[in-house]
Image (tube, rainbow, N blue to C red; front, side, top):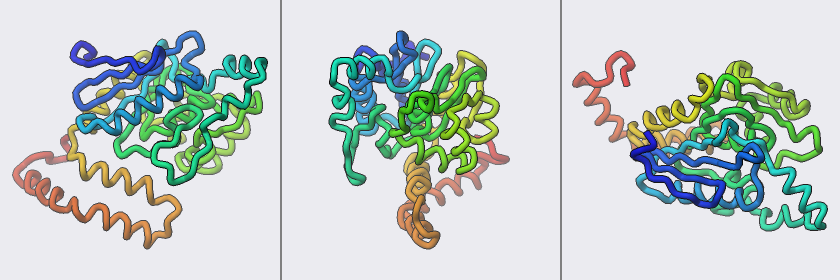
Length: 275
């Protein structure tokens, strides 16, 4: 599969691969289980901003190399900054306003709302800020021995990359409070049961399974799928009439696409749920 891809290097720790309409963004810092420092965060942010701007790219896969998704913020680097009296530098440039177009998060892309889907391919550890990056994605494909956890609870490091926002929205307040307050490990079977994972796959196959899923999404009529996706993202906080009105206003222009699809169905395509 990678033979036909185009691989670019954003920075030493970030690799971007093009597989037709699918973009694979790989985090590669094996010495710290793919933990993210400030330079890596900026490179991740740039990679996903570039994906958003690429008119040929339809779906992204976010992958961690060397057996782990991401172990969170690089605490070793943070400790070094603290020893050097430069701890405040870790927060430099991270303040933002809600209407900022492309705000940089501490972990990189965590404050972006892209117009196209991103699928996390989760292997090994996806903990603390790494879990927040997985939550930022639209879907999570998780290997059988992978795990989530708010491991930063042990050290008093706060969730500042959307964890306290996305986790309750994704799995409900009860499950979210359990994970946020205890910081406990959540393995794949439980993650699937509570809706934290969308797919569980054998060890070593998260990337290939996520790419296969991304290629499936890339084949659908894009304008309609992206309209439905954005309606789902933007309905939070709206009263039901307002959410229904917004859905109608965005999606009514897609009805012609649906009628064309209905004609293909009537001609025999896609019967009995076949894709």
